[in-house]
Image (tube, rainbow, N blue to C red):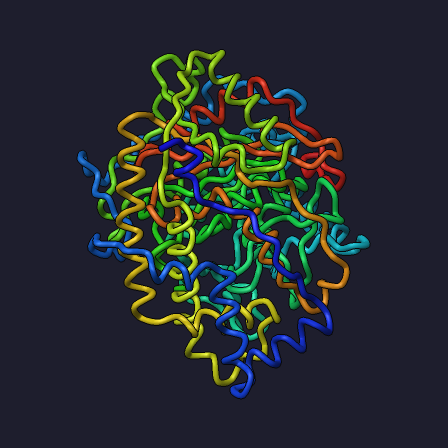
Length: 563
């Protein structure tokens, strides 16, 4: 059987709806008298009806935990030493890096207080634009300035907490960070301020990071475009007429526009990697359990990951080193190996095997395939060996992920259903209706498919060290004007956006996206690398090597806080 015969993902052409037609559809979907006529169509179009007939004999895997052979609580990264190693920034890089901020502070060229003032002014200006950038949901000026004053005093006394001291860091509104509420992009949650930082926020605070606010997101992370009818739809800094991708939309917009060098995102189905790809920055979804979920909103616990979005591979690795590691308050984080960034700056790729499943790799627009193939060729020129592999049953894995994340999100929202179901956007209401039509058998069947998908990847990684794919099958789509007020349903485009990202959420493997070029209209194109469990360091090494050959461009919307 050829690879083409093994490959079973399909592009689909399904009706798109927005505005009045979408309102009517959702009304019928939520009406008990008409719901039964529409639900079978949704199940069919999502591939769920056919998935129910797939024979799977494997036992279910409810959490994709793969205990490390050399289990360790250690974080072996010397943050200051790693930050100071000799690094080559990408040609044309417009972004100020974490080290640029640290060096400017320590040289006395600028203070965190001034940067905080510049940040607040830039955000105000960005939201006064037409259209507004809308990167942030909430910023508490007094808190930002208090942090900045404390950081300034530490640095002037020669006692910075780390290289991150005073560096602006944005935080997706999907985990607790004092003194903000956690809205997860809704208009009804998050009314009460968090009483304790999530572990990720606490790690950054201990490092002295300037936590500047909570970033915008698609509500409850249900759709990968980033649209939000309640807080405003974030705009892509490379072209504000286009989506950022989601659901970590505001974090990506904040980094790509220069409002901060790094941000925290969350990824249940590509929600870090997609916006990073659309906005031309670096996004990491680490191994399941590598980064603590303590204090995170309990939305999609078996596929959820917190992680960094950053302007460069080095900055992404720096933030990873701060937030990764075992946490006694999150049992799922206790199975990992030591956190390492071994060989980060080793650009010689000899001995590294890169897997390509050609039918999957080429199932994207021509401009995306061309740019990604060019990057793979560059890896070959650096010494990597490119190997053809096969990954069977990708469509069944796609549906298993859909069932898993939809069921878990719907379950998480059940306590609010009676009072707040109609407070969601129409797209979320549609997805919740679909999720509530799923059965316990569907969920267990999906977890059995998770076991099989993990087996398929384990076999692939016996042949190769990483698997390369495009990050998305297309560049950032244009934002339809008719969707801004009502949102939209466009399953055809959603499937193109998510074609390459769902698998590693289901299996728990680490995956990283990074820019490899731009299309004719200046929109970023990105490559994805998937690695073995606990081998994030290999992905960072390759992303850094790529930066030696990929020239970066300045976005249309861009701020320079160090000036």
